[in-house]
Amino acid sequence: MIAKLKGQYGSGICGANTYLGQNYMVVDPSIVSDLLQILRNREQFDYCVDITAVHYPEREKQFDVLWILYSFSKNERIRVKIMIADGESVPSAVSVWATANWLEREVYDMFGIRFDGHPDLKRILLPDGWKGYPLRKDYGIIQQDQEWVKANLGIESGQ
Amino acid sequence: MTDRTMFDLKPTDPKPADDKYLSHLELGEPDKTFLDTNELVINMGPQHPATHGVLRVILKLDGEKVLGTECVIGYLHRGVEKIAENRTYTMFNPYVDRMDYVAAVSNGLGYCEAVEKLLNIEAPPRAKYIRVILTELNRLASHQLWLGTHALDIGAMTPLFYTFRDREEILKIFEKYCGARLTTHAFRIGGCQYETYEGFERDVIKFLDFVPPKIDEYEELLTTNRIWLERTKNVGVISRADAIALGVTGPVLRASGVKWDLRKAQPYAAYSDFDFEIPIGANGDTYDRYTVRMEEMRQSLRIIRQAVEKIPEGPIMAKVPKVMKPPVGEIYHSIEAPKGELGYFIVSDGSTQPYRVRIRPPSFVNLQALDIMVRGALVADVIAVIGTLDIVLGEVDR
Image (cartoon, rainbow over all chains, first blue to last red; front, side, top):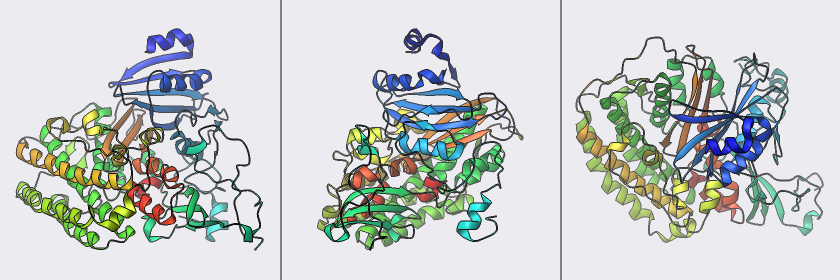
């Protein structure tokens, strides 16, 4: 499968590897939209397990965005990973897997990564007016949006 | 009358073809006066006894019929994933119990196994068997709690007392084993902290003999009960294709006819040693989810009996370094929790603290299917569907 994809995309597939028995591939952000559709339609990865991100502030391309996919017919998992800089957006996978809707909203909520083509990209776990993205590394563990807390809860601090 | 919030039935802009999955309501100017229309937008929750926690559902109604819903979640958000980045691997272990607090043992199992994989160690066989026994007992307890509260929501009060009475016996075993009843913190990375207590096997076998007639008793109350059938048959139907597209897992997926269980598909702990069936449903309605879970309880008992009979002797803890520093890398490990696939994605940067922990919660993903299951149904069915999805808000919001 990897060989076939490499033939199709050439250097778009930056790397495909196995770590501790788990397959993952690192791809270029420009092909990820096509690739996810191909994985869903041709390679039968019909179940999108999870979409998540990791923040590396010291890197030039600060964020890893990951799709964890599973195929019922092959009983196989694969992780697709892209690297993007802060402010770059990612193509939405909602039209490929409906489940991506809330998962992408959570990534946006926690990391501030925007998904192009998402039908309703807004915060999901935090309140709508909240400022800041808590799972970024520069967000402190006891940090919070003091203004929001004061305005909405009427207390000085939530701590 | 004018400040009353009303929603436009027509979407404000053209949407993609498969927008049937979208669960958000479009706010627009009402094009009917209040007297012309029966449309109504109401809030269910966040404080509502039938939402099983602090879940707020915005319902758009036409009379008694549901036109659309939107879930507002996050009331219990504690930032578990952020906390994980600031704790060592060992210190984070008890936190996972607080997500799905009715199945704390399963959460712990998933986390411990994920870290073990990252460290490249394996728990000894005896520890694996103890893990299976406790996890399956917990699955039973979780299903019993689900049945009691679900039936109570629909209007049957007796099952609540029956299931809580019998669940107590499981909690007693947990309490004797590790001192806690709910947030057990039963396992450690590398195995189990405690050897089974004197008489553990006897207690479990006594429970295995005690509980099957009780499960029959629950079924007697409900399975052929006319009111129960009316309230659950053809209610909250989700097709096989929709279930897969929405990524739902666990009994909800199996009731829609997908024979998939991680314990069989990708066995973890000692599950490959045991003989058990995966019950599935045909219609994907609330009644099927009920029968699937009832059968799962019996299959859990089967697994526990085999595990108790075959439990090997030996150490319960693998050799684990005092200071855990997993090599740089990423791992995704998931288990079949009572509610569905519970996954942990852990990134290690080689230090004592995880660089990132992502928890894939089954309740969160399953809750997304609520909208498609209740559209066109009655308000009372929303209660039934929330119950049948078996969500725990501690896990939805983390």
